[in-house]
Amino acid sequence: MITRRASRQIHIGPVAVGGGAPVSVQSMTNTRTADVRATVGQIQSLARAGCEIARVAVPDPAAAKALREIVRESPLPVIADIHFDHRLALEALQAGVAGLRINPGNIGRREHVEKVVAAARERRVPIRIGVNAGSLEKPLLAKVHAGEIPLHEAMVESAMGHVGILEDLGFRDVKISLKASDVVTTVEAYRLLAKRCDYPFHVGITEAGTLRSGTIKSCAGIGILLMDGLCDTIRVSLTAAPEEEVRVARHLLRAMGERRDEPLLISCPTCGRTTIDVISLAEQVERMLETVHEPIQVAVMGCEVNGPGEAREADLGVAGGAGKGIFFRKGEIVRRCAEDEILAVFAEELQRLLKEKKC
Image (cartoon, rainbow, N blue to C red; front, top):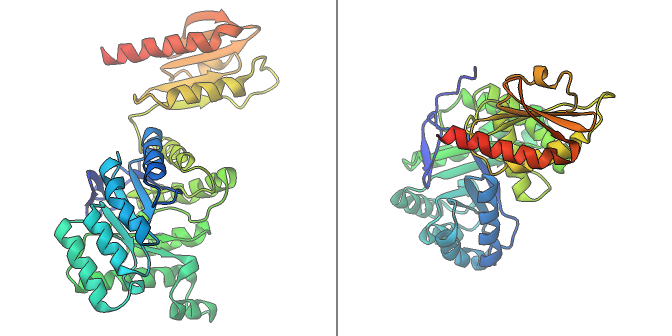
């Protein structure tokens, strides 16, 4: 059983982060934020995929100007990602964003930081301090290159320096992220930071890679930190459609037992006994389950001999072989059909199961 780290709780709109709240899923739009229709459309698509918090880049005044309408039409709380220009942060707050991602050290003079913090406090908007290994402050980077401190310690030092600026202003509605493209560095950084503060953590492996390689790297790093109890909200960063980030994140949370209100799919890896296209069947079943929000376990097996036994805990399972499909519940056979009817019959049995769950 995973024991979560005790952290203070903040709220991104209606979504609680930290303090024992469920680990939430974030993603970031890749549209031009100034294009309201495209950005809102992508946020809606993210919401359908199961995203709970959406972040948008605000690189210029045109993007900031679009935020008011984006926030108004978005089904998800919106975080504005801002660097260098405190005026963009102020405009984002006026537009009604639910969160800011800034680093106080890179938005100018002390008076600029004070203005942003005062506006965030007035609106009860949290600030995320985001430290990436690839963009550390030059003095810290010099210490790393000189071998004076390891990279993960420099990341923590950077984060605590930024947090210290906010704490000096009496602002503690904060969450922190420490991201590197290297799994070990990221894990070591979060573990060290957990000893230094009780702020909630936003966790991910930055610039992780493509859908396949990035998924592997992200699940390795985030999975370790989930086991450590150090995740409060996560983003799986992929060079892929943002919706894929969300799907991977939700699958990861289900696999780690952090999401118990959605289906869990079990499918066999296939072998020489397999006589049906298990790969295609499992993929189609997985797509069916994307719109299901019930804590059911589903199994797709390729062998009628071992299928029911290997997945005997499944609420609904199908095993194929010799031109037919066999359906079972909790290891007991309940129905048979021809091979070309398997998918249609599965859909029927799934709806029957869901209807029973609601009764």
